[in-house]
Image (cartoon, rainbow, N blue to C red; front, side):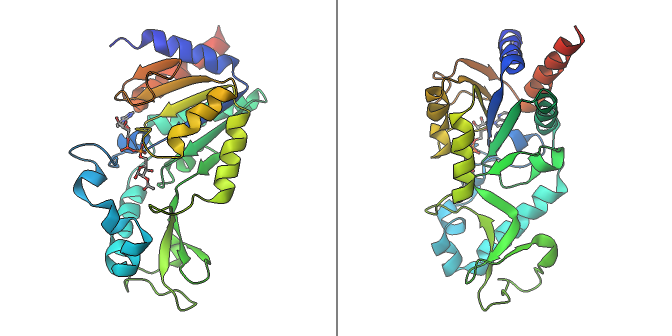
Length: 255
Ligand code: OAD
């Protein structure tokens, strides 16, 4: 499908926007080499059972297995590099900041790739695998301060260390939700990128943005449940579409 027309529209909206919210999901990191969750063949949830790996019950039942799985995931995340999609969003932030405008990236990803690409305002609503905390006291440590020689990892306070990610059945971090809703309620442009838009509450953020009067955009390899709701959808790899959009935006500056 020719994406020229949606790219032109999205570029023009980004040029006019004062306050942008970008929701990202696993799809934006796919071109870095990290698996998504719901791909029918390669997705993490096609190969592994989330109830065995991503719940507090699973951790209590078999903390060694769960620790091993997250160790594998952060090792992968640290091996790979941010891709052109992540870099394009960092360039967008820089451009908007130069004009006294803002962009907030609200990510469901726990891989830290937006920050490594240079994005500053990133809200991690599902937490991060790059920090771990004690099950007893909540005291956090970054990976550099943890040893994975003994699994599960004993904490300094008689508990175990677990990743600072949100597991199924757990609350999202309060401060992250507050920052997200505050950004959504004031945004005039909302972009949903590389997410299947199936997991709550992220799947409903589009409604909050629409209620605030924002234009809405989807950039995704495939159609999703919100495709028919957005004002404009561009379908293709975000690592190609996002740089194309930001290049067009830069061309507007030069014209
Ligand atoms: P999903 O795996 O559900 O969806 C990934 C989306 O990215 C799909 O719609 C793909 O079509 C799309 N996609 C794949 N490659 C792409 C590419 N190169 N460019 C653009 N789009 C691409 O992942 P999420 O929506 O992030 O939660 O899943 C949300 C949450 O479900 C995750 O944060 C995780 C999971 O269970 C927890 O673990 C709490």
